[in-house]
Amino acid sequence: MKTSLSNIDNVIIHACKTASFPIARIAIFVVYFWFGILKVVGLSPANPLVASLLETTMPFITFDVFIILFGLFEVIIGILFLSSKLDRLSIVLFAVHMVTTFMVLIMLPEVSWDGAFVPTLEGQYVIKNIALIALVISIASHMRPIKGR
Image (tube, rainbow, N blue to C red; front, top):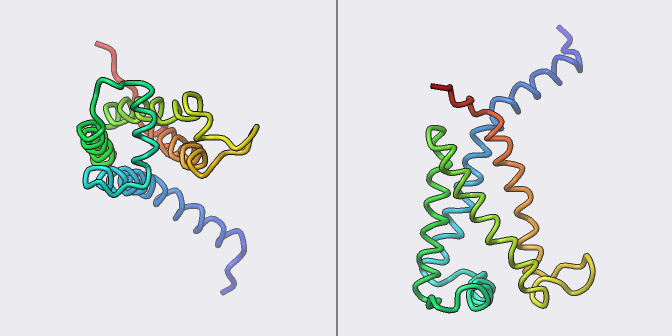
């Protein structure tokens, strides 16, 4: 029996549709949990960037306290994304995190940009979050609307 290209295409598309949603959740969990733990234990390569932004935005908080709380915040976001029952909460916390993350591009241009539309490595680290935003939008698209009372 010959398998047509169309049948193979359909099988691949179906497999991708089945796997994409859980893989998106796992990917967000891995990134947030891993990067958060690195901050908590003081091994994150992003710590100097976080310290610079903290000094600019909230100089009244010590870095040592903030980085642990910020790392735990990221760990919690990652864990929340594993449960579809907590999507709304995880998306709100994710949005807060994205706002703070993208502040680097505006508030620390000397750290984020080598020139117009030429991000530094730190700037690229922030800009790559667009991919995470796309994953979260994909997850949100699967949510059921809240029923009116």
